[in-house]
Length: 319
Image (cartoon, rainbow, N blue to C red; front, side, top):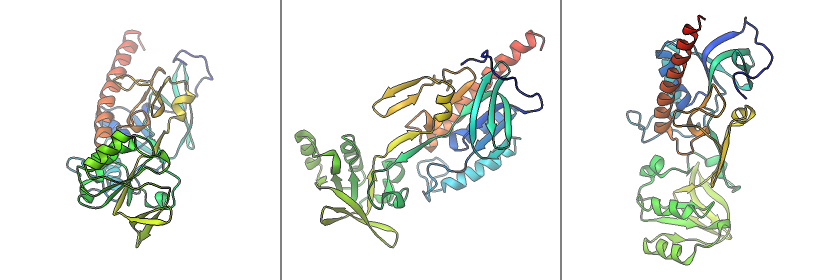
């Protein structure tokens, strides 16, 4: 679908923007900050359900180490609003591309925009193990660089979800010499992998993981068959589900990978749909908070340059 596609004409009374950003997490708000400071008309639409909402602190974010991720978003919203960015709490039901630009459908009515930036993030699909969801972001985590320091020298349990989980266990050995690897449904490690685990004193606890033991809100153990293995925290590898339905509905090209199907972007964040861009976890599995903040700023710069080129073209055309 291109900007020249023939679709229903937009009402001239609709709200107009230079950029509508769908998603108000670190990537979306970072982009909004740069675009607002560039004096663009920006609207951010967010449903208020950030990926890391259950985490009490975030780490490895320079200048904000230990800050609540919800506090970061609160500060970000205040900052972008100071530059005239409009914030809407809600969801985008659909978007349409036509000769006049892009129309975004919201509960408050449609918004016409010159460019659309999707920063809707992803969800973590956890193993179906009792206690996992309740402890997510607290006693059950995924990123060693985010939470490894807080559990240095603890007994760290790694519940496998794929063969890659062995790499996770080996990485966590950097933080503690008491790492326990639970193969669970993935199956026993190959001989060479088991030897590598043993040489670094990573214990393998075979059997079916049936649940987590929780006492006073803290993970204390992993139940395997009929026994309990004491641990202080559980690391695992959830399946990653990008919130890319809006991009796919517009016909954005995708690529299959070992992690599933992901929407394609170029180095500046452009999708295959003219005028539609994407940033953050919705298109980049590696985008933690720090990466998302930087990516949002970079994409905003490229997006603004694209708008400047369009401004020049319009001026030359006498518009």
